[in-house]
Image (tube, rainbow, N blue to C red):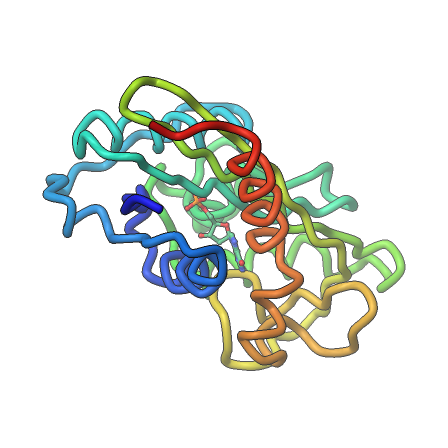
Length: 213
Ligand code: IMP
């Protein structure tokens, strides 16, 4: 398998993508190692699919190599699917679920995002605090060929952060069938059942059915 450039700068995502794709025999390299300049790719899409494609396509153009992108986030049912595609910038995004932290479109840090989310869901009972992580992985080839795959993992949210593993919303998310958060569960377990793992498994199946030049 050829070398594949990861469009993301998120180190946590790269570690997880590598842990999963190494089992498929894919060689993932960070975008800076592929000579991609340190530019921000604006995520202007309204869906995970659109943003995942935008990132993969723009970085493929800059690297000239096969590129893989993940666009992901947490969808919480009791607050109409928020934060969704705004997961990374939830605490700072103006106009949606505004609160005193709203100040711009920059990514916010995990702690601010989690505390904003916890404030919004604190009055809902556990049974109503259902949520899912979504990951859309897109692979774009230099000839423009594109393959995309969506993976999800269902679960419930708890009202206090638990565990120091993972990143983002992991400390408040309990996957269905477990009693620990992604922050508490071992990384190997998360990487076998996560939204990202499910998307990458589906991507692998799709790759097995096409010819790569
Ligand atoms: P993106 O980089 O625009 O795709 O934003 C992804 C955001 O969704 C991250 O910054 C996290 O807030 C959240 N997220 C995505 N995947 C995970 C995960 O596996 N665990 C926890 N949070 C995640």
